Image 1 (cartoon, rainbow, N blue to C red):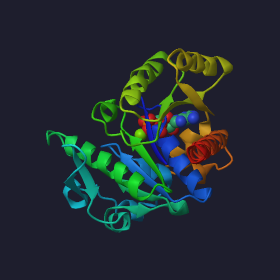
Image 2 (image 1 turned 45 degrees about the vertical axis):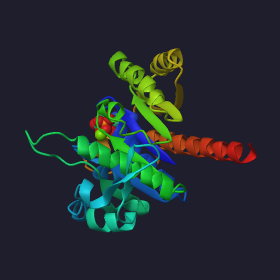
Image 3 (image 1 turned 120 degrees about the vertical axis):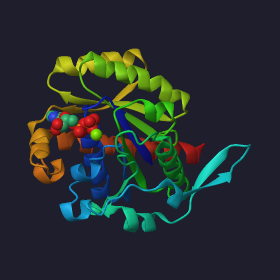
Length: 269
Ligand SMILES: Nc1ncnc2c1ncn2[C@@H]1O[C@H](COP(=O)(O)OP(=O)(O)O)[C@@H](O)[C@H]1O
Ligand SMILES: [Mg+2]
């Protein structure tokens, strides 16, 4: 299963991606956590210690993917080396064995376009799905709709859009959902985050329903998330029993249930 996490800046994408990655691993899955944000911080949110953080280097496009001509004239990318090699050269293995790679790096001011990086991420996610369908791959993204417009998230099976209960955040969901459908992503669902009241939840549910998007999880506003950030630790290490962690655990269970049902339908059909 390949899961992309999108949404407006500050909505909670990295918190959800990192916590869900570790919860999937605790459920016994092999997990790849990919940071697709040019200003990466997924590894920190995963709780990877400082010494290992220094080992992380952006995966360079040329070193890992080569072009092959696919069906039709469309050029496709394929991996040149096993994922394990990439992890040991560029990545880090975090708590619960979550394998982490930084897919985009800071280019520095004025150092040009990151379209090659988008293509690398797109090809890499496609390859992981083909070669390793039983693994969970979670792609954290930057706060921009470029991941949709450039098709970076084209090959995920599920796109989670993290939303907060205010209009500009919901508007972002309204822009992302149709683009995701146009890309042919099978499942697009909203994750309501920082929910403080029933009214907050209702605002998100009403908006999502009006555009035909399902709310797959509701994560409460939880001071433990901010405390963890402030202390530069991961939420799961800081407060494993917190309400936000419990909500992400329910999200993971729901994703696994739905994936199981899809497999069952496919094999009976
Ligand atoms: N459920 C929550 N309750 C309280 N604060 C949260 C919650 N989720 C995220 N935050 C806070 O919101 C900020 C942005 O979270 P982050 O996961 O980095 O978002 P993004 O990756 O979308 O930019 C951080 O300060 C984080 O601590
Ligand atoms: Mg982030």
